Length: 295
Ligand SMILES: [Zn+2]
Image (cartoon, rainbow, N blue to C red):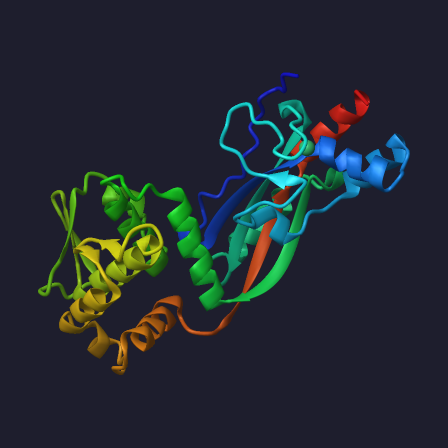
């Protein structure tokens, strides 16, 4: 059934890009109706009103591997991997995660107020997390959305890291036309653009390397960085010579202790943070209705 294309996306332009993570997952309504009617023995009408109320958990909405009746697919006309149901049986949940802090609080309140309230079209889930967990989440998302074999990858990861390091700068603009990223020992500021080159101070450059290493280490042997392919030992040696350990007062230890301390430094330690998940249930509500009407 063709659905009218409406302007449905949330306007997130006022948020620092690093404070936002977007997730999308599909749920199979054929599987869902089956659970409620066959397994739980409900009449279709009761099943319908129960399913409408259904609120997925954060884990169901954001897991990197979906569990039934959820599934992920990039195909244009996917089939449910569990029951083979076609596209008209699928509903999409789009979830936006906003990291709560001073830079996002006012904008978040304004956004939440602007959402339609009727029929629980949107649901907001608040959770707490720590900085380390958020950092790993961020790395994972970064790894998912980037093509490591693409030459552009090094620029994209550098830009993603800088968006986290200095959220207020418009990095898309700074990176527009940049072809190479270099370390500069002469810089007094964190970064400087000159023509098609972007210069980074030694500390900032080192952190871009660490992020690149961490994102790519599970994909390639060692990690892929601005300095080429590096094993953990090579990365640590470069950081040490580059003065990073000294600048951040990281004590020496074996390479795994050093890695731990690098992660601690980059993630910002063990502080707690609030997370707000905005769940867009509109497609789900529409599809549940249309599926039920055909039941
Ligand atoms: Zn299914």
